[in-house]
Length: 379
Image (cartoon, rainbow, N blue to C red; front, side, top):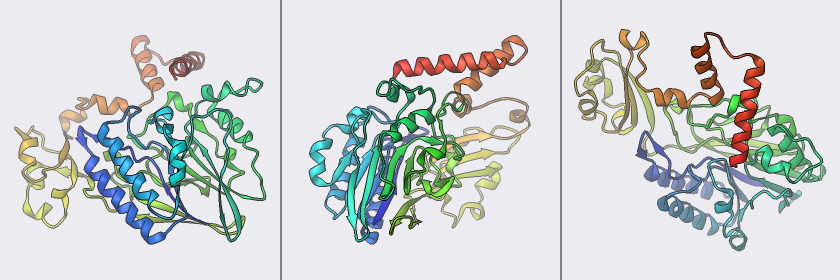
């Protein structure tokens, strides 16, 4: 049984106000070429299909084209919603699409019925569990104490009644403790969304979404495939790919990756204005065709630096300085800085500035609990 694992397409995403739709269309076509080469039995799409819960018309159209292309191939598609998606909007039309081999997880209702594929070694049960919070699960298990994300996942998976003799695959969208994050992912209150990897012990392969860097967590068969494109400059060093999973007989799972080459790469460049505009610096590098973040090290600001640099780097998205002035404490991009930090960390810093001392453990616990309750009430 061969499966292709994708996630976090984030269709409709904008990076520093630059639309990524053309880049996304390009990379989806590249993924289709990989699928044609590999000829898998199924494609797993582990959430954050869209970048917003109410996606743009262009993003919806792009997903529609991609699913139509997949449905024309001899395979089955398994898709769940992530934290960026609206579970209700994603599930619309799902029962009709099943006739075309497109299986979309319904809104979580306390039960998850497996979808089964069969090969020479027997059945493979595929469970689709969309992004869930404790508040989503608690209402279906009133007799259980569900206060954490690990508790929520344990309850949801416990209700699946896995057959240990069969090969079991889970597609889900959560943050598993130990995974390496980057700036383009949502941060929770004090890491409260952590899920312990042990909850997945009953599965032969776990196709995860949510984390943008491809990686395994705990064991090789619990894996984030990562985004197909770089969505922030914190991902500049990532090597994007799709994950191929091959299941032999029970206990035999092989995982490998296929590299993806984007239409435009994201790169970070650093140096003086004079150095960066020398022909010898950029000629033959491909930098002029990339999305670029430039950090100038000139001690004096260069007048109209952005417009001048765009002559050499037409896709410049971000410009900042690193010099004595900025190192002395001037922050040029407060929004980017604060988006990397959790709300609890920001509150902690504010409290310390106001009171001359950090919050105590009891105060942090109270603040974290209050934030989580507010967010759950809004869910």
